[in-house]
Image (cartoon, rainbow, N blue to C red; front, side, top):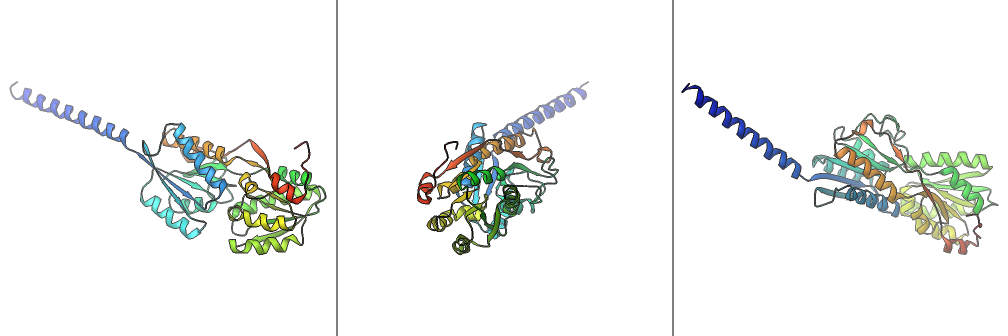
Amino acid sequence: MKKIIPALSALLAISLLSGCTKANKSKGSEGKKLKIGIIQLVEHPALDKNFQGFVDGLAEAGYKDGENIVIDYQNAQGEQANCVTIAEKLINDRDDLIFAIATPAAQAVANLTKDIPIIISSVTDPESAKLVNKNTAPGVNVTGTSDLTPCEAQMDLLRKLVPNAKTVGMVYCSSEQNSYFQVALAKAACDKLGLKYVDGTVSNSNEIQQVVTHLCGKVDVIYTPTDNMIAAGMATVAQVANEFKIPTIVGEEGMVASGGLATYGINYYELGKQTAKMAVQILKGEKKPAEMPIQYLEKCDLSINQETAEILGIKIPENL
């Protein structure tokens, strides 16, 4: 018995020590700040609101920057090369979750990691952008929200505001997949309405003024989707188009604020908050990106720039 008792005492001591260690480790884990990396393609009102909505949505759910999470926000300034560099940084930092705003930013991150959860937004069609296997069942480490706008409703709005229009100029960036997707929908809507259309693509922001000027002699109205390059240069588009008295129907509210005539589009701030709700489920371990379908914002808002309407001499119908 004299030999057994010390042995039992030692075993008990080891057990207690082990329990304390586990308890301390658990407590330390709870106190750890989660790292959330954010990569945004470029600065313009829509994407900026998307970012702010996401941050505010996290805060409302109890995830506040500097308290229990650390947000590392990076902006690529519209350069694809910067997207890759930023993506590499966020992945090397071993962030707990990465939020990618806009298609090129999302593609840069998704191409470099299959492990870190990626939540995306301001991506029109994640499936055609090859970010997920299917929008309804991603099957990978990527999920999030789409900023698909009601292109058909936007063409109906065009018809109401510019009833005599016969030809529509489609202005968009030739390297943005999301723009091709939206323009295809807009063209299909034009076909139903008996409208002709002419493409006016740009490969960089320096071409915007020249392309819009060229189109103004050929079209009755200009349409541009939620194209990131055009959105960032919308002031230039509006300046040229308004000078030639050509109305512009655009993809989102921020472009209207920059001089576009009107849109029927989504609220990017609310889209960001909706994306945050999905991120919270991932952070809590309740769901994995692979099993979370891409979500869409159901509510759309009508926005009309009254000052632009006056410049163009357009009277807004009472039913709008």
